[in-house]
Amino acid sequence: MPASLATAQSTLPSFIWDEALIRRYDLSGPRYTSYPTAVEFMPDIGPATMARAAELSRAGGGAISLYTHLPFCAHLCYYCACNKVITRQRDRAMPYVERLLKEAALQSGLFGADRPVQQLHWGGGTPTFLPRDAMEHLMAGYGELFNLQSGDERDYSVEIDPREVDEDTLPTLWKLGFNRISLGVQDVNPRVQKAVNRIQPREMTESVLNEARRIGFRSINLDLIYGLPYQTPESFAETLDAVIEMSPDRLSVFSYAHLPGRFYPQTRIQAETLPTPQEKLTILHNTISRLLEAGYEYIGMDHFARPEDSLAVAQREGRLHRNFQGYTTHADCDLVSLGVSAIGQTRDAYFQNNHDLPAWEAAIDAGELATVRGVVLTRDDQIRRWVIGQLICQFRLDRQRFANEWGKNFDHYFADELKRLKPMIQDELIADDGRVLQVQPAGRLLIRAICQIFDRYRKDGASQRFSRII
Image (cartoon, rainbow, N blue to C red; front, side):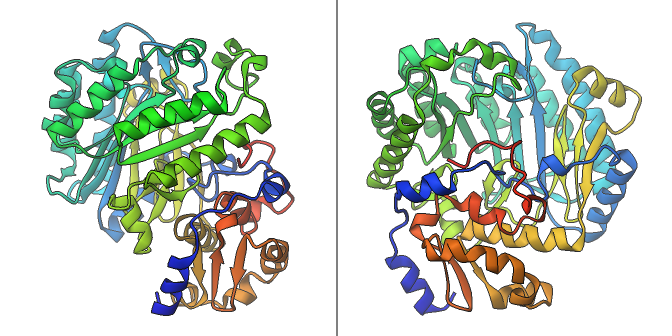
């Protein structure tokens, strides 16, 4: 970045709250963990297409990212919209792990077993539902099938429910190679916790966080949710104070979307107990202001990080990227995904496994890939994915860099989009000096609305299947 631009950028405040603009642009829209989004996935993308995409990826070489979906949970959280299996039967873990390793053997052969795994993530569900022997067996199998790394530059993370942690859990994960964790918290208020069926005293969370830090885990993240039953601006401010005292390296602050028609567990949440839309806005405004005041940097969407954290550093250096796990520092890793409902990614395609656990098991038992849908990217898709990635990760887009990357003139290619962007320029959500599109402080919260301008599939405004932007 030219020094003059960098200086100009650094003098801008990172965030401006403009309620009139928020109300104008707070429509529904994608979160852009992929482009095209999962709504565009088609059922004609099956195992054969996935295998061809993997072979092309292998030919291209380079590092990979390895994601594992572990669906089991011992407790039902009423707000949850994840693909999960509620059970207290821990003996279900090992058969699932054995099938994961069968699937891993198939995909390792397709993607290439020698490629370094720079990023590894266990998500769920509740990954720490797995007993110690199942965790050890899974990682040992991965070690035989993939080129796992041990250097400091690796990013091996796991989602942790503090209620599912005993004295062996964190030491076991550390020995298995994990170096980053994310703790689900949502809220420390007992009344809110009871209303969503997630009783988790602050002391429990704090104990796990402190032990993780003592062992050596870095970039520790805490997840919060605003918009839950009985939350008020005052109560959530108290939660924030407690969380800031714990001093995590990263924070994710998600908006609760109440969709009981789509997610059955949410039928147990009474709509009249939820904060009003105005109260939610107040909670969000207060949250962002308080976290910035506490020294966190606003990464984008619902993510915050300490200035010294690798996420914040990557954004300042223009290296931040986004995939199905959210923001990441690993740019060029194709995503190998294992388990029920898991979504994989290459330069040319996305592909998703069956959502139904018995159907996924049947495919794996038959020695087949469980891919049931996806999308093969056109050249236009790839170009738009790059543009949306620049805006949502770096908050800027350089025309010359676009020309160097794609061999096209930005203004010609996106002539229609630039016309539709003009109202946002007038509203000072984004600035255009003819060389660089620069998201302005008032536009950071509304970045999903800005990105939709460049989304070919949203040109008719069809965003009803997505959550609201704020």
